[in-house]
View 1 (tube, rainbow, N blue to C red):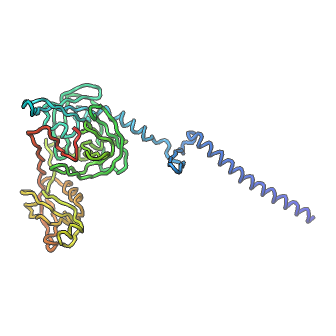
View 2 (view 1 turned 180 degrees about the vertical axis):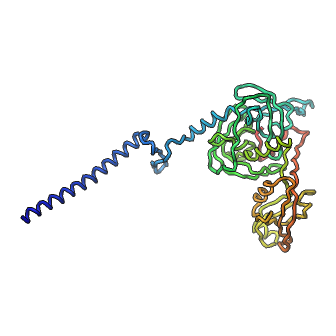
View 3 (view 1 turned 90 degrees about the vertical axis):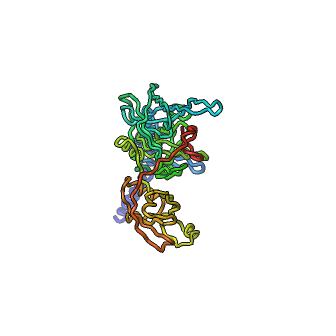
Amino acid sequence: MDELNETQQTRSRSWITALIVGIIIGGIIGGIFGTYIVFKSPQLFPWAKVSTTINQSNPTTHYVSNANAPSIETAVENVVNEVSPSVVRIVSTREVIDFFSLQTVPQEGLGSGIIIKPDGLILTNNHVIEDADKIKVTLSNGKVYKGKVVGKDPISDVALVKIDAKNLPAAKLGDSSKLHVGQFVVAIGNPYGLDHTVTVGVVSAVERNINVGNKTMHGVIQTDAAINPGNSGGPLVDLNGEVIGINTMIYSQAQGLGFAVSSNTCKKVIDSIQKTGKVEWPYMGVEITTMTQEIADQLKIKYVPGVLVMQVMQGSAAEKAGIKQKDIITAIDGKPVRTSDELINIVRSHKVGDHIVVEIARAGIKQHLRLEVVLQAQPVPTNNKNNKNTFPFPFPFSPNP
C-alpha cells in the first residue's frame, strides 16, 4: 500500500514538473512569435509603434508611444499647405543716383511678407520697404497689387504694408514666449526670387539681444533654418502653423545663424501702429555690460554682481537721473539685476514715461544710491539718406533685402 502511494506521488510530481516546463517553453515560443508579428505588422497594434534608430556602430530598435502622431515630414507638409498661401513677394523700387552718369535710376529690392488680416494687411521687415518710392506685392496666386506703408519701426525692423484686397488667406501670429530651444520651425519666403521656398530647422536660441550697427535688436529668435536674401519679412512658423517670427537677417560669416523678430515683438509694433500710428520703446540711455570679476580686477574694485555702465548718453533719462559712467546697476525696482540682458528685458517691459528706481554702487562700491529714472522714448537710428544703396544692418550681420 505504501509503495502504491509513493508511486502516485511520484507521478503527480512528474505531471506538475512537465506542466511547468510546458508553460515556460510555451511562453518563450509565444513571446518570440508575438515579437515577430509586432515587427512584421506594427499597424495591427495601435498602442505601439516600432521605430528604428540607426547608429553606425550599434543599431537599436525601440518603441515609441502615440503612433497616431504625425511625422515631422507630415507636419511640415501641413504647415506649408496652411501658411504658404499667405506668403507674398514684395518688390520695392527706389530712385538712386548712378555715380557714373549722375542720373537717378530705379533700383529694386526683393523681400517677403505675410498676410495677417484678410483685408490685405501684411507684416514684413522695415528694411524691405525702407525709402521705397513704389511697392509691388505679388500674392501666391500670381495677382499683383500696389502696396502702401501703414507704419514702420526701424528699431525692431518691423513694418506694415496694406494692399486693396479682401478675403485673403491670413496667417495666425503665435506666442513666441512659448518657444523652446530645439523646437522645429519652418521658414517660407522668396530667396533670390525663388518664390515660396521652404526650409526647415530648429530654434537655436531665444531672447537674443543682437548689436547691429548703431542699435540693438532685442529678444530675437535664432534659428538654423536656411535664410537667404529675399527671405526677409517672410514668416518663421512652428509646426502648429502659427507664425512665431519674421525672418530678418543672417550672420554673413557663418552658416546656420539666422535671426527672426519674435512674433510677440511684432504684436507690440502692430498694436502701437494701429492705435497711435507710431512705435515708441522705453529707453534709459546707457551702454552697459555684465559685470565680471575680470572687469572688477581691471577697475581695481571689489566685484559686485550687476551691470556696469560704460557710457551715459547725453540728454538721456539716465543722465538726467544722475547715473554716471562706471556705476554698477545692482537692482531695478527692488529686483536684483545680474546681467545686461536682464536689465534690457526689465526696461522693455515698461512703457515710455514710467518711473523706475535704479539701485547703483558707485566709486568702487563705496556709495550705494537709489535714483529715480523716467524712461524716455528710444531715439530712432538714422541711416545715410543720401546713399540709398546702404543696408541698415552693416557687416557682419546682413539683412535679406
